[in-house]
Length: 160
Image 1 (cartoon, one colour):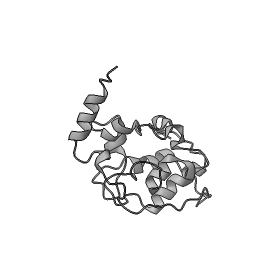
Image 2: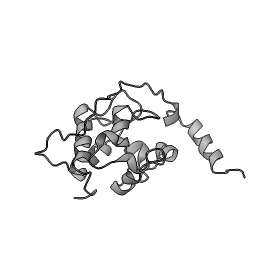
Image 3: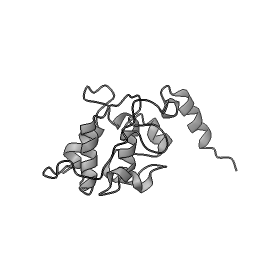
């Protein structure tokens, strides 16, 4: 049986300059140091107020590169979502993960086991460190904020 959906997908991915599959995995240094400890237990991290704004940053945002340009189903262009199945447009879709991460994209209480942290740090077992087009666009402090949110249970909603 011929898989008709695969042919258009491969053709589109091959035609788009800078598609996720065209990037070298060695872009930027990997940040492999990880611990499952809240760096600031006195500050509760809010997904809506602390994490979502980081993800919503566009490609030319001077504060860094977010996820919106590639992994939001709500945007006109989402090639990497199409390639990986990872939709970050809502917290619910983030929790479902993508093709390789599944529900392990966020493991409450365990950021070092969470695919999103591994991708941001550059130590996920497959694919590129995110966000693409590096070097690193998320600072250590921003990645630590994501880790702290996960250590605290990864609770929240998109609108709190």
